[in-house]
Each structure stands twice: as structure tokens, then as C-alpha cells.
Length: 333
Ligand code: NAD
Ligand code: DAU
Image 1: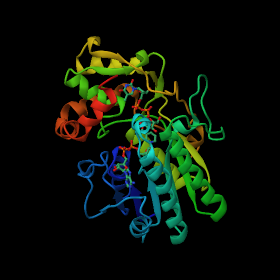
Image 2: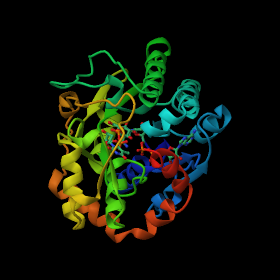
Image 3: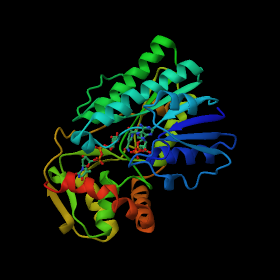
Image 4: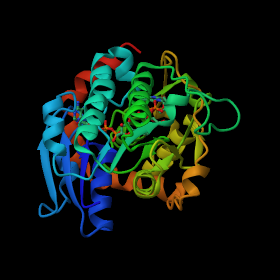
């Protein structure tokens, strides 16, 4: 695998994957294709060596643009997506366009060009919520919000291209990911940056009810890489951090690490259809040799430090489009 197309590579996990590939594989050339939506950011790719990295601005919902960027590549890894559940509740049409139509263009171009591997990055949210135990890849999917329903649509289309046309599609389903360069709409960077600024932390439903399993971004990238190189086409692999925390536990840790107290917590109205708990079993990926490396205590401390030391990165985001979104999402809450 010498030339890999990474769609959505200017986002949070995609840019970490570009860095990971360039660091691990000296012979690899990466072509990043990204529409640069509100979540895409060329600052995230500032460490990518231009001799081994090409950036193409483009939309995966544009079939010709996808075919052009894919030309000459052996593999594609798709990160491009509308990714924020709360935004999908405000309006879902972009979610369908990118997360379903965009994936269609990728698998269709891959079929025509005979790619060696097509890895579709998906999410544990497609399984829906689980009170006890953990989902395995063989469990049925029951997505419950427009974001996860659209991701499930893209997945199903990808799997159909494997079954029907033999396109070598592999799917990964990752758990809640955290680390540097995450757009500050997601709970962890939102709460860290709000805490730094002594702004309220808007916690849904008291924070004791909901549980997420936290996965460090580089561990998510190594999981995707193992699935890409050692996985079996047609298969699905769960990528989980093994760090389940109630939202209130996460919030208290952020307050401790930023030196703030609990008076910053603001209990706000719940997310409609809020999934209570996500939990997935990554044994199948571990059997291929993957093991997450980052302990939770170290990962969260390093991540908080990164946001403290890189205000240049998030302050310009929070003073742009984000401000209008924040008002719409939290203004009346
Ligand atoms: P992100 O929102 O930070 O980045 C998404 C990227 O996709 C941005 O660079 C954006 O510009 C680009 N993009 C959006 N629409 C596009 C289009 N039509 N054409 C081309 N580019 C487009 O997202 P992320 O958190 O890095 O998530 C990456 C992938 O991982 C997504 O597919 C998401 O569903 C999945 N995932 C995320 C998490 C998580 O916790 N963040 C967990 C599991 C899976
Ligand atoms: O599980 C994987 C998924 O994780 C990814 O597929 C999604 O792309 C990613 O956004 C994330 O989805 P969540 O909905 O779990 O993440 P979010 O950061 O939006 O919320 C995490 C939890 O925190 C959730 O229980 C809702 C809660 N929350 C979130 C926000 C933004 C709050 O209490 N207050 C908030 O302001």
C-alpha cells in the first residue's frame, strides 16, 4: 500500500491518521481530500511533510472529484462525515448527503478503479444504546439519531458493494475519541476550553445517566491501520478504548485538571433521544494484533494540557462560525 487516499483527513481523527501513516510508513504517500467544512482545518495538517502528502480540496458527494482524487491510489480510508449528533438534530440533510451519498461515490469509484482496500470509518453509535454488556460485530444495528442512522446507511451500502461486486470493503466502529485537534463542539474539548475560560459547562441530564467509552485518538488510528492492513474484506471491527465513564466523572476530571470548581457545571435540558450508554467489544480487532496504548489518566491529562498550550488553535475556531452555533444550540437551553 503505497498511495492512500484519506477522505476527511483535515478533521480531528483523519488528520491524526495522516500523521500516523506518515510516521509509521516511510514509503507511503497520502492524498488527503477534504471539503473543509466548519470542522475541516488545514492547521490540523501543519505537521504533514509536503513531500509525502498532497492536499486536494473536494467534496465526497461530488462523484467526479472522488474519482479524480482516487486515481493512482491503492486504498482509500474514509473519515469524511458530518459527525456531531446535536447538529444532526438541528438538521440532517447534510448528514445524508455526506454520510450516505458520499460513501456511495467512494465505493462506486473504488469498484471502477479496482482498489486493494476500502476502509469505511464508522461508529459504535450504529448499534444504539446498551444498558448491560457490550456489543459484538455480529449484533444487529439499531441507530437512534439522524447522525448514526446516516452512518449506518453508509456502512450498509459499503457492505452491499462487497457482497454484490466484491469491492474489498472493511468497516471499523470506533468509540468516543479524544485528543488534540478535536473541534470544540464535542463534549470533551468544549468542556476543557470552557473551563479554561471560566465559562459554564452545559451538562445534559445531570451527567450521571450517560456513559461513554473513551478512546485516545492515536489508539483509534492504530486500530484503523491494523484493520486496513490485516483485516479481512467484508468484515467489521470494533475499536474501543475500554475507559467507560459517566459524563459527570469526565466533567469532574476536567474541572480538577483545569483547576476549576463545580460551580461551573450548568445542568441543561437533555439531548432528544439521548443514547444512555455505548459499549463495544474489541476482541476481534485485538485478535489481529491491536492493543490500545494510552492509559486514561495520562490521555486525559495530556489532552487537557494540549488545549491549555494551544489556545492559538481553538480560540480562532470559537470566535468564528462556532459562536453562532453555540447560541443556537445552548442559548435557550
Ligand atoms: P470531524 O468532524 O472532526 O471531521 C470530519 C472531516 O470531514 C472534516 O475535515 C470535514 O471538513 C470533512 N468533511 C465533511 N463533509 C465532507 C464532504 N462532503 N467531503 C469531504 N470532506 C468532508 O470528525 P471526526 O471526529 O474526526 O470523525 C471522523 C470519522 O470518524 C467520522 O466518519 C466519524 O463518524 C467517525 N467517528 C468519530 C468518532 C469520534 O468520537 N469523534 C468516534 C467514532 C467514529
Ligand atoms: O461514540 C462515537 C461517537 O462519539 C462518534 O460517532 C460521534 O461522531 C462523536 O460526536 C461522539 O458522539 P457523542 O454524542 O457521544 O459525543 P458528544 O461529545 O456530543 O457527547 C458525549 C456525551 O456528552 C453525550 O452523552 C452527550 C453529553 N454532552 C454533550 C455535549 C456536546 C453534554 O452533556 N453536554 C454537551 O454540551
